[in-house]
Length: 257
Image (cartoon, rainbow, N blue to C red; front, side):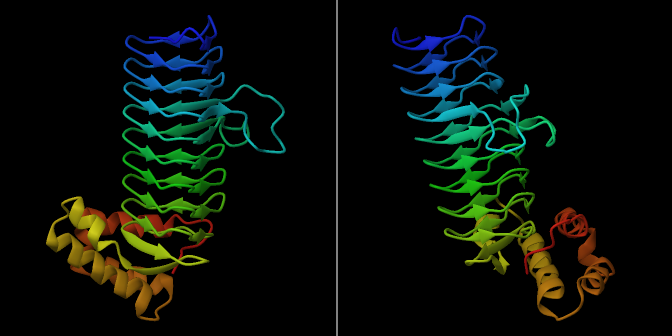
């Protein structure tokens, strides 16, 4: 159902059972998948693709032009998957040409009120951004990570899978998978044990990740020697430990410790 006060461009593709609330605006070349609900006073700009069964709450701005000085009106996009929730006043921006041209948000993410996702971010699945979380441009967030309220992540940082970033944290380096980070400038405070248990990680896996954490971040070894030590141990055969080591090796900004 489209409310009579909503403005929907004729070139927008609206799926079956889509609801668009009062005074919302949907631009040209927008695609909205079936069963998605758009609340009142929402603006969805051209170049936005929204999947099925998403919920977009009031006053959100979806697919607006990126806040990038180099952006000169080029055609770029925002791609949102299925079953996402965007709460009140969320802002999600399109990509830039230099950043690959698209911002991508996967499936089943929960983006809470006043959160911001900037240009060229790549967000996986089942990610939580708590109220007021702010992502600068070109950030990668892997599956099942949680970003606390009012946390801010510097551009080009990566947040690993199942990591937990505490509220009011400033992230300027990559946060490794499975870890807990907090602080004005983020520091690691061990494994995200509670989150891993909630995701039904095996006890053996959690013990192995704790061992890897202690070796890499708490023995005083250089990062290279610590990684080699873990690689030579039995725990390196676990997929989660392999992912942790690969994530660290691929860092460009540096690893939060």
